[in-house]
Image (tube, rainbow, N blue to C red; front, side, top):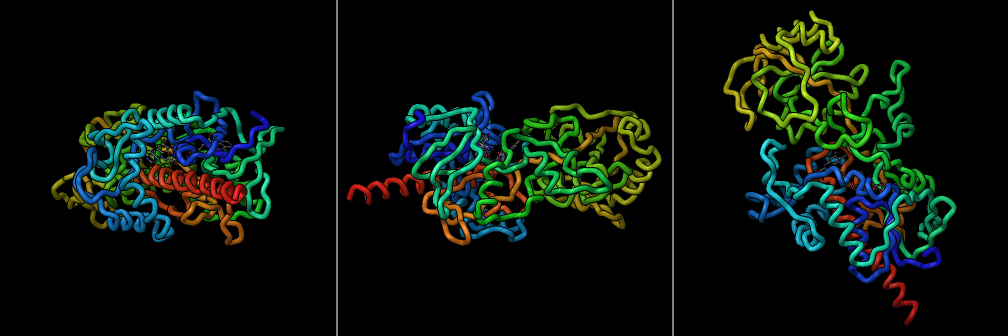
Length: 470
Ligand SMILES: Cc1cc2nc3c(=O)[nH]c(=O)nc-3n(C[C@H](O)[C@H](O)[C@H](O)COP(=O)(O)OP(=O)(O)OC[C@H]3O[C@@H](n4cnc5c(N)ncnc54)[C@H](O)[C@@H]3O)c2cc1C
C-alpha cells in the first residue's frame, strides 16, 4: 500500500470526510481515508449528531410544512449577526434541499423529529439511529465502493508547494496523492490551544472548566499546520458552538444526553446565586447555543439552572438526575450556594413575575417587570416544591476558527485558491458560522462542502489525467 499513488487523500473520517470520500470515489477517483481514531471511536463529532437542517418548499417525507431558502438564510444571518459568507451559506442551504436522496443511497435512514426535542419537525430531518448509524452507513458504503480506510492514522503535517498539496505525513510515513480533502474538524479537543484562545482570569485558565461534548481526536493539528503554512484563516478562536451541559458530564464524548434544556423554564444563577441573563429571551432552539458562552463568562465558569415542580415534564431531561430539595435553603446547601443569596434572588424574581398566560410553545406574555436582567417569556414564580437544580458548565461542541475556502471548497493561500487542496466540515465551518448557531446547520455545512470538496478533488485529478494523456 505504501507505494500506491492515490488520486485523493481524505483526512478525517467524520461526516464531511466521508461525504468527500464517497463523492470522489463515485466520480472515479481512487481514495484513501485517514482517520486518527481507532475503528471503535470513528466518526468524530458526527457520531453524536441527530439531524440536519433542510430547506424545502413543501412537506417532504419526514419534514412538515415548508422551510424556504430565504427563511433559512434569514435564520442563519440572524444567529451569526451577519458574520457569514452569503454565497457559501446559500450554497449549503440549497444543497440541503436535495442531499437526502444521495444520503439514502449510501444507507442513511430518516425519521420524524422526536417529541420533546427542540421543536424541529419543520426544519430538521432526524437520522434513524442517530449520527452513529449515519457514520456506520457511510463507512459501510465507503468500504463497498473501494475507498481504502486507515484508522489510528493521525496526519501530522502536509507537504505543500506554492499552495498545492503534495503529500501527507503520519508518524514517519509520507503518503503522496494528487489531491487532498482536509476534513479533520476543529481544535476543541486540544486543551492547550483552548487555554491559549481563552486566556486566564484571576490566575485561572478559563477553558480548564470547559467540557468537550464530542470526540477527543479533534486536536486541530492540521488547522494549526495549514495556518502556519500560509493558508488564509477565518474566524475567532474563542467562537464556537458551546452549550450549557451538566457539570457532571465527562471531559469528552458526553454527547447529546448531557445537555440541560430546563433553562427557559426557570432561572439560572451563578456561584454568587445571582441571575445574569434573560432565560426567556427566545425559543430554546434559537437560544440553547448561547448558554455555554454565557456560563463561560461567569466566575469559575459554573452556573445552576433552578426550576420548581411546575417545570417537570416540560423539557427533555438530561442523563443525570437533578439535585432535588423540599425547600430553597436546602437546595442552596446542596449546590454549595449562599442560602440567603439564593432566597433573595428567587424572592426578587417571584415578585417581578407579572402573571400572563403561560404557554411554552409560544413567545407568551409571562414576563418580569422592573427586574434586571429581565425574563421576557415563560416567567412564573419558583414557588412549588420540590425544587430542582442542574449544575451547568460550558460544553464545547466545535470551534469556528478555520481555513478560508471558496465555492469549490478550495483552501485559500494569500487570497488564491489551491488547485488541489480542499476543506470541508468543521475545519471550514467558520466561513459560514462567524458566531452563533442554528440547530442542524453543522451537518448541512459538512454534507454540502464534503460533497463539493470530494467532487472538486476528483475533478482536479481526473482533468489533470486527461491533460497528461492528451
Ligand atoms: C454532542 C454533539 C451533538 C451534535 N449534534 C448535531 C446535530 O444534531 N446536527 C448538526 O448539524 N450538528 C451537530 N453537531 C455538530 C456536528 O457534529 C459537526 O458540525 C459535524 O459533525 C462536523 O463534521 P466533521 O466531519 O467536520 O467533523 P468530525 O465529525 O468531528 O470529524 C473529524 C474527524 O477528523 C479526525 N481527525 C482529526 N484530526 C485528524 C488528523 N490530524 N488526522 C486524521 N484524522 C483526524 C477525527 O478523529 C474525526 O473523526 C453535534 C456535535 C456534538 C459534539
